[in-house]
Image (cartoon, rainbow, N blue to C red; front, side):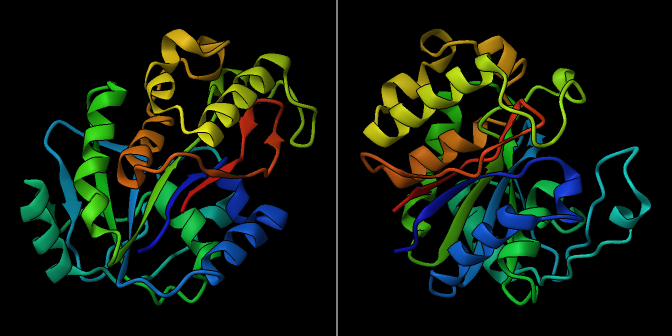
Length: 251
């Protein structure tokens, strides 16, 4: 049974200078057995109807603008898993998508975790609804696949691009960011699923840390898929004062 991982994937520029964060992702992947495939639920793919990539060779999507040209030349040529995608799609009542590639929420962490691009990758869309309970339910449907798949939710424990650029990459965390982050740490470590699902009412400084919640929704997929009481936090700090980089491991 593989763990379930929630990864804060950060800004696209992390692919150019992964540093200690990239090393931590690589060490985490190296500590695990090789899965049949990696299934990533990224904050950057939401659909009204659940969709699952089924291309044999999914292309690399550069779904960001205004960044250094070197980023747009990066390619992550991991294979897909078409037969597995069709099997999983039937179980989830999802549509397969042979045209969709891997967005940066998928390939940026995997480029560090599996740099040889030799583990098959599937990407699963989030529901278009912002309801945490709906994404938690999706995670519950994935729970029985943990014996075959490494399930990763890729988003951000905090994410407010309106604050981007107000501080340097290594600045101290903004106080509201740190309050929200530490509240999330406590609930995750204690396994308080009900409080986490009700975070919009229960957590401090929600509006500043998640003006919209698409980057937190993959966490609720992970909660549902794990069904464990308590999680390990890999503290990877905060970038730009507002972008928490924590990874959460549900064993």
